[in-house]
Image 1 (spheres, rainbow, N blue to C red):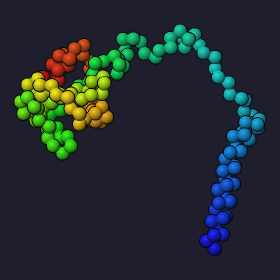
Image 2: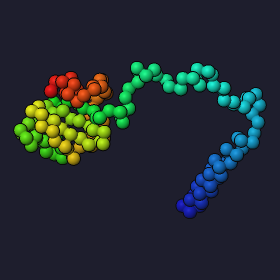
Image 3: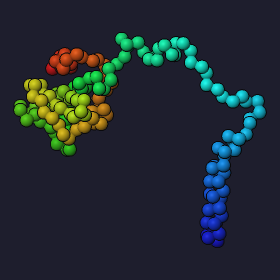
Image 4: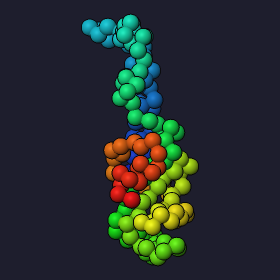
Length: 148
């Protein structure tokens, strides 16, 4: 009984597969009554002249045009089950987390010590950061904006 059922199931799957393979060929050869063949509309002058959607003053810089991204991290930073402390001053909270263009992560404590953090990556930064609300021409202005 079991083997007969398996043969019937295999035959059904093979018939379904053959039907799925034949369907695109069938649709390509049939003329559908009452439905004209789709044609692409001709581009208008506006589409040809202005290919960009937004004017230049409303465009956001691309990832390659900015030196990096930064966010404030007020609570203690736990990496691999350990609380991260600054090697220069021992601070363990109120970090500025930088995600640089090369996807490396740097931490800056309140005292201004910078430390590269190999335990974090750009994916972690993207999961934990909010939307970018402002672009700054220099890192110092960004730090001032974040309260450092």
